[in-house]
Amino acid sequence: MTNTTKLLRRGLLPVTLALTLAVPAFAQSTASPEKPVPVDKRYENEVKALAKNPAVKNAFKVIMELEPETLQDLILLTEIPAPPFKEEARGKKYAQMLQAAGADSVWIDEVGNVLARRKGKNGRKTVVMEAHLDTVFPEGTDVKVKQRGDTLLAPGIADDTRGLAMVLSVLKVLEKTGLETEADVLFIGTVGEEGLGDLRGVKHLFSEKGPKIDSYIAVDGTGIGAVTNRGLGSRRYRITFKGPGGHSSGAFGLVNPHNALGRAIHYFAVDADKFTREGIRTTYNVGVIGGGTSVNSIPFESWMEVDMRSESPERVAGIDRLLQAAVQRALQEENQMKRSGPDLKVEVNLIGERPAGGMEPTVALAQRAVAATRFLGTEPALRVGSTNSNIPFSKGVPAVTIGSGGTGGGAHALEEWWVKKNAHLGTQRALLLLLAETGLAKGKK
Image 1 (cartoon, rainbow, N blue to C red):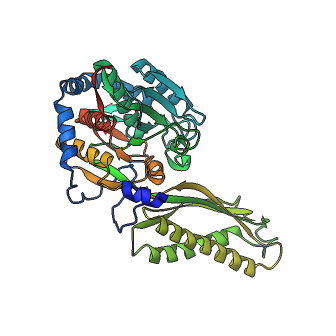
Image 2: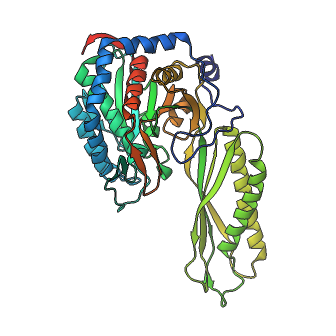
């Protein structure tokens, strides 16, 4: 049996259907809901039976009792800076908190991920519940939490520090109630989810050096309605044109990197505009440009960083080809225009790649996530997003990304905010989903 056949039978393949959902800054999309998601009765009954279990009812009560403590955990973690590639301080504290919560073992891996294992009764399966440690904010950013009425404001408070606090809360609840799962659970805080981190934490988890993982629940974004079961793929490049540079008058006639960069952006934008007006939704953006030293100097380099996204691997590859063609056309034209000196050169460096992929709504994990959401009184909506789940999607491992509860906004802005409204529902949904996926063992741990 081929790998493709295996994935088809399991309902796990890169999703390439024509879909048109928008994806904002937060990991969870807020596009208009799709049609109600069908749920197999067995998963509805499974979730209802769990929720009626006296031990689980008690766990729901403990979640409510822990809300003040969970809020303090959120504030504590938010105020520990976690800039890109510098998550160490927050990671060490999170490891201490997981240890104190009662995990059987806690460790920090080679790239900085924090892992806490809670052993199950049989341990034949391992389920991950994860949130990411890093934020997008540079070193030196003021991360002190401010309060305005019922609103908490601080960089990274909702994306994704609330997720970290909620994951920790689920572990605390399991320990305080003695609930035992059949499967092992790994509670994880990952590094490198944002920007140029390029999902390095979760990529490491799924490398040969990572632990055995059978299913993956990522917690990112807020609310409880969305269930991300499709991954938005992306490629990011840093493209640098390089020349000798010189005096604007004395060296006039040399190749000018800025000229080439301007042409490359123009040619790419024109072709990409046509490409993205039809077919599966695909986006592109020239996000950062730079280079040059002074107004009277021919620059010695000019660079840009480009982001391209689609949930179709073929569309990502297609728009990538347009970028490469635009760059080479611009390079050739600038070299043809020079009057003296050496040719212009270009360096094209891939600085980020997130694979596209997805999981069919009929897969058990997706069905359980939908059933748990609906049980708690919210109509679930399947979404596409760019989250840590992209990696298990691409590996054929069942995965979903769910919100952490409460409401939030201003992601990636200094005035990012979060409100506790119905936050306990996020934790209750996460617990229900985890218990359904791991299996609830009889008796207490």
